[in-house]
Length: 239
Image (cartoon, rainbow, N blue to C red):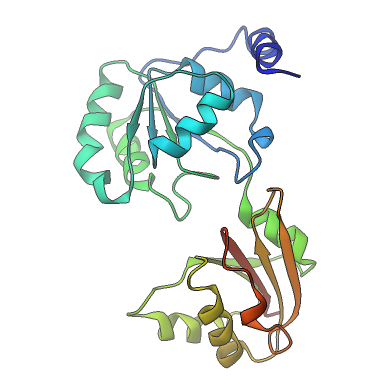
């Protein structure tokens, strides 16, 4: 199905749906594979007045892939507070705004929570358009217990890192941690120190062409064998 056919299908499927004025849409985007985006997300992204994105270049690639030309503005962590009042003003002036991050759901280890909180405080409607989640993908692929799990997100880089590890090792659940490619080897070595020889699943480039899941016990996996490419989700069976 090409993009023109997709657009026709979306218009037919959502002909009764409107991108309401003065509403913030928190839109989940694919974590790697563009085809994982929902039809509803595409409709909203095409029909809002403005898209606030973590990186306009990354979101621009997604929009271009589907032929969407909606106006964008950057909204990353370092400018969240500076641009907050502008977005609130736009919403109060009956503009519809979509909030997106580079991948996955905004507010989850990504910018957005300040804006959503302010909208709730100001009585501005907020709708969530759900989608792909690296957290759930990694949890399911790990093969570890899913009844209860603890999501850590990114570990502190320096201050508080040791304290966080000490807290995590006492949580008897499946633990999910985000890590950057240039810290993944160090992080896995630290995990041996704090978790011992627990089972682990190191998930790289989820949903992408070179998706890779490395499974085993922490002491069995050689950190130096892990490719320092892409984004990582580390799942530890600490049950």
